[in-house]
Image 1 (cartoon, one colour):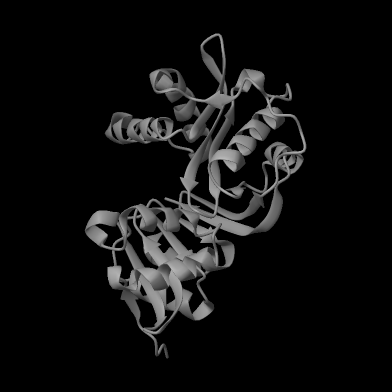
Image 2 (image 1 turned 45 degrees about the horizontal axis):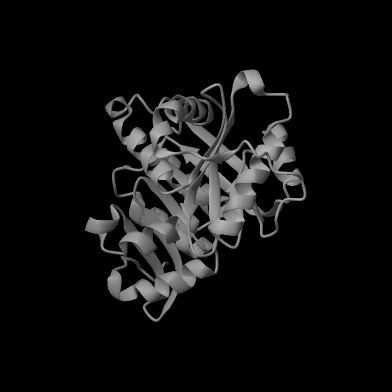
Length: 279
């Protein structure tokens, strides 16, 4: 029998939450960024953060918003979170986090929340804190605000290829375009342009005091196989380490061997395994 109930956490417990997030700065990066920006009040954060553990000994967290993300979730916490969530309608578009916790939640929720559109059980989590050992491509740079119209088609193509659905399907892509605009405006979007066309792109989708997490890495189909990705990623990593955060991290599908080779050449090392359930 579960003796420790799950509870929704509020701003008064922010310090305890931040201390816990510091114990898993890479897998919990997205949650840490959201809390740093908007706190724990659900009406500002656009999501809820659930806690497991005694009031003076918080053990595990679970972010519930557009994504469902367990952080440092023990087996007991996974069972407790699942028990609570099973009584709620699924509103999240994905479950993502450390593989053991995500798959444990899915084992308990799949009969209620399923079926999933895709289950990705093995996504290596990688990080580096050193400048890449390979030369950076000098043509890769931060995207300027006036170049959003050039970047946006490449961003749509990347999202559709990676996620399996178009970001234009919901609200004609307005929210996705706002996201791309925000990344460009904050200096977190990178690209290489050739004759006004994006041939490589990547973003620092999550930034915390501990890490800059790269997402949205994409090479135009007609440029694949030419060897541009390694130098391009090296440019992104170099700028992020010198300007943004003390580490750079990312996660990748285990079957994407070309991308994994690129990240290895750029100095990334494995630090764990994530999993993603897509709805």
